Image (cartoon, rainbow, N blue to C red; front, side, top):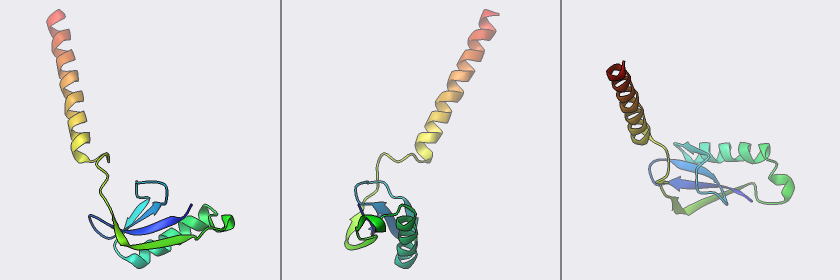
Length: 96
């Protein structure tokens, strides 16, 4: 299992595990992404397994993961929670 450095669809370069789709980190330059990937591979002791520690993939682009949590889902969840609390307060006020 190697760690890959691959161009991000949005901006910069992503560091990803070969068998995963979610980026471990994003970096503005290829050099900083390679340095981060080498540090990550040393921490996870990938070198001891005999694999290449870091693979740089310049031919492919890492796509955006649509399942990522972002501001919009967080905002909608907060709005739903706020609505539920206000509804509960109104019901309790009516009953008392």
